[in-house]
Image (cartoon, rainbow, N blue to C red; front, side):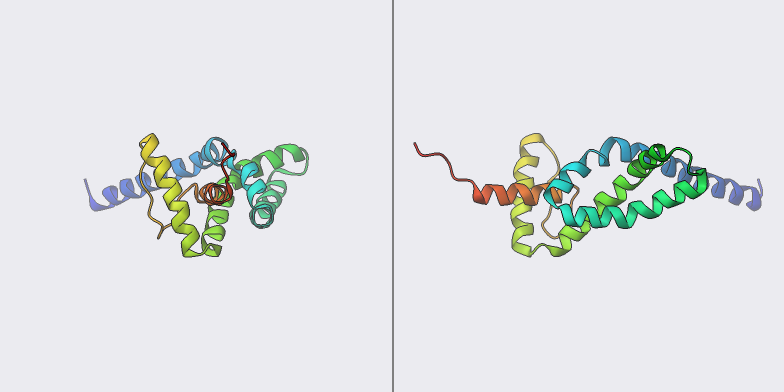
Length: 150
């Protein structure tokens, strides 16, 4: 085997892995990220709408220009599935940057209590995690909760 053949096989393996990851992106969007968008919109409507528009409109326009304007609901479905993951990551980053350290620590405390109960991994308040938007809301509701009088 020559170096050229080995390098060609290595490049082919890299490209095949990259294509497999790109092919799994819509599957991730449909299974994991798409269900989060309605609740994230309910919790943070302005941020979710802004990020969804900034990421979704270019994807929608690219889909329409690529496949034609024949079936717009299909383009909306494709856009929703492809944009769900990046919108969730962008929203998490936006909320993470706008939260103060005390709120991050409280959200991490709530997440770690739940993680210990279900056997999930523990998070650090210094880094964002996937359910950060929901954990902030849990922390806020925990602070506002008043138990009923006995």
